[in-house]
Image (cartoon, rainbow, N blue to C red; front, side, top):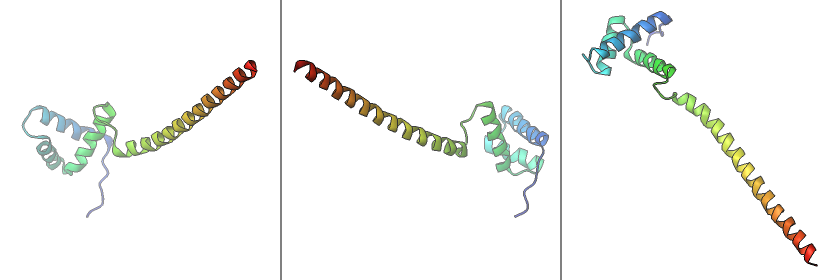
Length: 110
């Protein structure tokens, strides 16, 4: 396997634009269009797919990548843990408030 090639931003944008233009002409499927543009530019279709998906994520047309969701899931876990801790604290406070309210009532009745 050869070393990965480095492509500049202008080349990437041109490749994605060519893909979108050809797809808009409805000549091929998405896969066929990626293969055609890849062959024209001597580019792996999977690389082109990654660039297209990155562009769609940047435009908000596609959900975040799995790596971004994994990073978010750690934060979500921490927040869920914090919520559970606060709910336990609230239950303790409710129980103690009821206890002291009952003690106050008992004291007044005596």
